[in-house]
Image 1 (cartoon, rainbow, N blue to C red):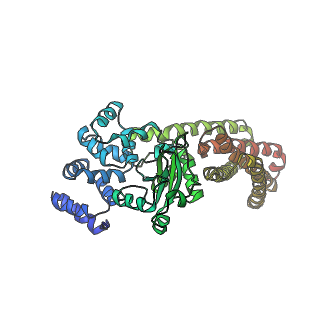
Image 2: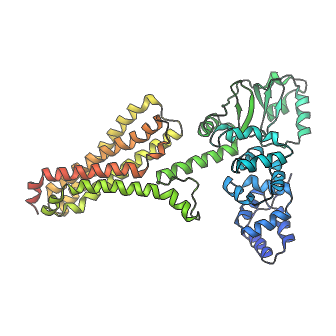
Image 3: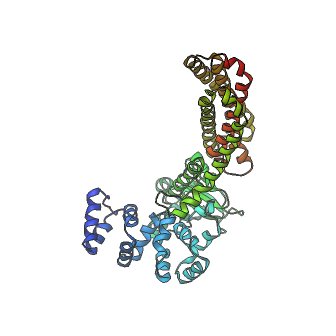
Length: 455
């Protein structure tokens, strides 16, 4: 078993000191004792010129291990200036799924040239045909398979001969001569079985699988639901074409949650980082901010239609934002709940009406509670019970609107095949703001003579 030194602060300080002294022999000695994940983290923290020097001094398998641990964006950054013959050697040693991701980020000309220079492109080529966000785009071809007619003794001998150099060490997949998936068997069952038993007699033939073009999020839900360490991917002929490992599904969950968080925060580029270039930041954030500006102007237009009202009762201007803000907050809560439920597969089409009615009841209940508290408080504060009543009724009305909009927006987007997280705070808050202003100011206009008695 290989042991690795953890990347504690003292080790990192020592590495940085050796780098400053250009003592690359000591750098390599320390680096080789670290886990590949820690190596990758340290490697990416270096300046580009330092990375270039290290790449010249590390062995190809060592670079491949580091590249396997970097995310796609980091790998491309590290690999973009490497000579293609050198890059082809590295890709040959990378995990097939990670290698396919890197090749997918290169230009068509670079991909064609790199593949022609590789010694074993056949493991990677099948993976290039699938989009990144599908089960096929997440799977690896690096797995072990057995034949139903093999004996347990033959299977164990086969495992010894492979050295377990695979990303899928917990399961062995059983396929026939046509590569059709017949079953799965775990190491425990194999170890405890009699040496002369046939694999067909001890395998589990009820195998959960997905197809290559299924969405990666669906594959993640399947793995979570059935508590699987690995998920086989089969084509339309039920032939085993790849396997998704648990660590790849963890990456899917991270990517999907990041995407939802960014979209709920009105950031369209889910790869955006705080240190991203100016143009990248503008591209990812400006469109939604412009949309927010337009929707804010719509709210201002609604207010402008009640200009005379503010002249007569200036105090109304102090409280209109309370109605809009509470409506926006309530709607955002609904959006967050619905998006999460959709992501986990908890919402079914037949439940939509029930969910909507439940949230309407919740919205009315919240509106009554908040409306009474705020209405009574403002009425006493301003010594104007009619102003308190108007504010309370407006809060009730807008909380009801918020419940309906915050529930229906993500559900409708999901039914239309769009990401429900697109029902972000910008769109939902824009609707609740405008309607909130309209409700509050319309009620104020209706109750104006009564409000003016206390002004």
